[in-house]
Length: 396
Ligand SMILES: *Cc1c(COP(=O)(O)O)cnc(C)c1O
Image 1 (cartoon, protein in one colour):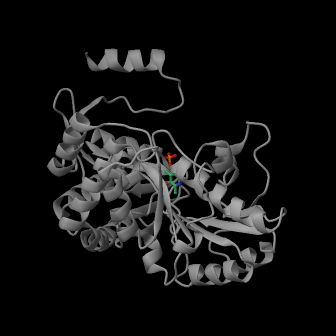
Image 2 (image 1 turned 135 degrees about the horizontal axis):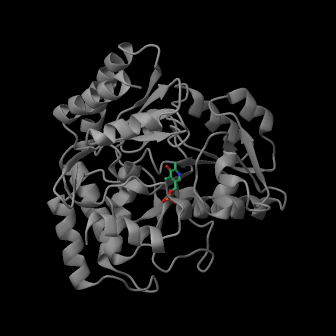
């Protein structure tokens, strides 16, 4: 199919929910993607922080192909060896004890909030409040929208599930003021991704933890974007000096294969009894094969350490770039390979200039260029993207 035809047919049949760029991607290798004419793009969006191994990683592709031929899906009413392996490796790398598998980030957060409410309500029918942060993003289902701190996503759907309260992010006094005995959970991203790459103060989560303990509320960390090595540790909470009760993951966990889920500490292993929660596809054999392969490869190739190293280099290069345009760039933020460049005006033109230059970046929160390359990224690719950003900023 010609590119024009692909675009026309997609626009004809897909619901118009995405503002798409007029390129048709065909295949990828490493940090590069190619359109049908073989034009090459350096991809620093990586499927929105999903493709941690880049494109076409042989270990991942082979594992998926082999599992597809063997057993793709069977019900969770039976055991599979590949699922046993997946939950073990997820528990190990996350430092948590028990895992539930679903298919997306929103489902992961839904399940985590259900667990917090089940436990809270079992103690007191009024203990169902969940606190989350302004400018957070937790998903697009009704309850994850209810927990998402931005009207852009929330407005226009009638009443959302009640019991959600918002506080400013990285503001411990505001959280303290909002806490009471009726709070069953506090849901926070360790670094806000969609909200514009906001890193909280180093002691914020320790204080959040203390407040959760004081009011007998669960600390739920949404690591859907920060997890799987992205910020230079397996999970971001490992750099906070404290631990969550429930951790949610998705995006990078399957290296590009759809999977989400949550993991809990042993203390909360029996909040759900058989029949209380479930999923038809969650923990599907094919998804588990992808997760096992992706996590094994991240481990074998030391990509967590690499994310920290390359991230530090990238941040330094971005700061040099930003220094050349002090009237255009407000700040460089982020950690590891979750970096943001805040601009003084909307960043759409930068994204478009870069795309013309065959570099894929993304703009979030209106004016923050978000950079989330695959963890395998090289210094040469980082330099090439910084050069493209400089060219884009020069005419911005
Ligand atoms: C992407 C994201 C989600 C939602 O994940 P989906 O798979 O799109 O449902 C939730 N929380 C955070 C922090 C995310 O980055």
